[in-house]
Each structure stands twice: as structure tokens, then as C-alpha cells.
Length: 245
Image (tube, rainbow, N blue to C red; front, side, top):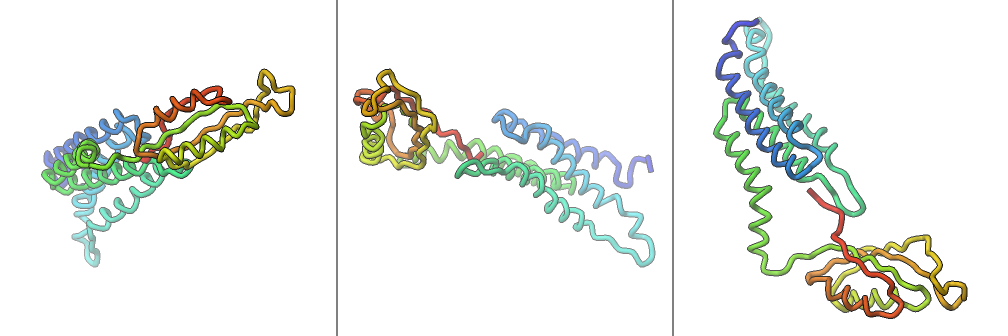
């Protein structure tokens, strides 16, 4: 039971060590990106997958010698592939109209495959898969920025404080569409506070609205024009908060 050999030799420990190294490198990249699954999660997934494969290859050897028994080591590997989906599914969630965590869930899936390759005695394939991860996650965004001739669609939010009963909101929406921006969301704060001259019915009140916009051009000229409008009290711009990573 405690002897060296029979599935507990230097090769098996080396394979587990390689799984530890490669999965830690992948997890470290996710940790630096401040993702929900970081260094510890990826390392445990990689080493655990490698250990499962080691057990499937060497742990059931004595049972094969018994009469009327048979063992297929690929069954354990198949269960690893299906079981890792529970962790990946827990990393994916929807916020508004955007899905987040897809890349991290796919990375968990890849780390599982890297660990299985290490445990199965395929170190070159495991190392190649780890290199592919860094190429896709870190290199592809830089490549797509250089190859894309058409400007990418930028998503941002326009924060506007204005005085009501002057048709400001309708004119703002018309301006955004005429400038080539697509309005994806309109959120008006439910509580409007009285302005300095809000006692009269015709004077209007202050209101705040957040407009979700998409466009292929900078939005700063839009903000500069709105600052000169009568009835506009404050204008702000911020990046869209949703992400698919």
C-alpha cells in the first residue's frame, strides 16, 4: 500500500507536479485579471483532474486480476469531463442583458483537460494546451484590435441631470440617434427633487436619467454639446459596467 511503484513512483509524482505548475500558471493569469475563479481554484482543478486520471490508470490494477471482473479506465476520465461542468456553470451568471464569466468557465474546463493530460502521461500536450490558453486570452485581444479595420462598437452610459417640462429628454434622444448612437437603455430616477424655482407648476423640476448608448465614434463631442443646452444641469459619461469575461 505504501510502497514506491505500482502507480506511486517518480513518474506519477512528476506528472502531478507538472499539473500543479501548469494549472497554477493559468490560475495566476486569471487571478491578476481579478476573476471569480483565480489561482487556488484553477490549481485545485488541475491537480485534482490529474489525480483522478492517475487513479483510473493505476488505482484499480489489482481488481483486473480477479475472475469475472473488468475495468475501463476511460470511464473515470469521462466523469471528470461531465463533473467539471458544475463548477463552470457556477461561474456564469447574467446581469441585465449581458452574460458574464464565460471565459473563466472555459478556462476552468481547459485547466481540467491540462490536468488530465498530465495524469495520462501526455506532458507535451498539456504544456501545449497551457500555451494555447495564454495565446487566446492574452494575445487574441491584441490581434483583433490590429486586424479590425472598422471601429469597434463602444458601449457607455450617459448621465444627465436636467429640468423637466422643457422637452430636454426628447431632444437628447433625437441628438443621440442623429449622431449615430443607438440608445439601448433609458433609466429615469423615480425620485425627482424640486429645483430652485420648482414652486410654480410651469417651472419644472430636476430629474436624472441614465442612457445606455452604443456607437462607433467618441462620445465626448456629444457631451460638449449637451453642456451648452438650456435646461441641462449636469452631464456625465462612464463606461458600460457589464462584461462577458
